[in-house]
Length: 446
Image (cartoon, rainbow, N blue to C red; front, side, top):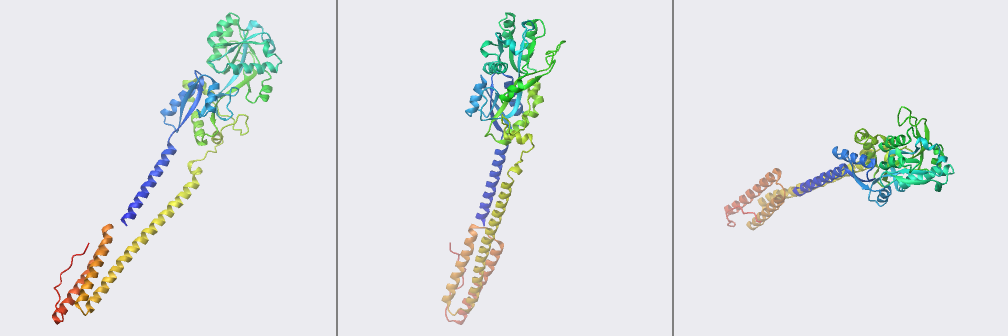
């Protein structure tokens, strides 16, 4: 019985350890590597998010990996060196990536100083465009957007010269008339865009001309990675609204994408955390206010991760919903195991009880036999058997706890045997048939 109890304790401890390990693994935070371009607003946003998640010990943590270009971010993502990446819909969008969130939408801004007389795409023929860039990651993509706009209006790409400019180079280039117009691909409200508009106003000594891409929707229908964005009147402020009228232009989206193999629950949790953290993140990086959930359209040209769709459509499963069958089957298995152990314990106990009953029954039979023997030698054999039965009963208790019932019953039966043998020996001695050795209780053999 002691061995069975020990096994039950070990089994219980093993079950507790297994459950504890399962709970730990389930609650252990998921650390996701996110690739982002150096010195970008997205790097600032995700770095702030990583700090926020770590501070509040969220279930999802971020490890920010910084690269020089968006193309390098995409390459790290495709090579599985990153679980997440910030990508622009028109620049090296990884085919294996699925959208988690739209970090912000970038509009294509074409504007020129007032005195240049440039008012439309057609007026760009033979002109020189300054392509505004931040870092090294968006120059080629921005020029491709310009080519798409020029092609829509049958303006030869070769007829328009380009020059890459950093923001700090813009005022000097405008003052020296090295460029006639500026192309910028920026989210509305960005500091870079505000400074560019201010530089154009100062260089042209008046309100800059905003050049619309009126056929942006047509272009976006042909190129699924592009979209149409409306620039409303007066978005840049001023006594004279800048721009003076609402117009359409091309746009691209900057997205946080995830590996399609990434766990749905993890991606759903990340989506919820980033959306709920927008106010806090925006207090550090204002552009975080532009974070938005993607359209929950399963047939979108840029696919959305299933974990995001489940979160947006309130289809997330709790642990009990997802693993309910496992819990049910596990409970049944544990119940069956408990029943089996109980049955084994009962059977073992009954067997032990049956063994004791056999010993006791034999001792009672010996009492009767001792009273009926006709020779002293037979008493020696009976006493020898009684000693062996006692040794057998005590041998079982050497390994297991000695029960009060067994101790009392065995002691009583053995006393009766001793008395019966002693009385019979005395009767032989009184009759003078054979001198018997005086009765002395024997020590039980090992």
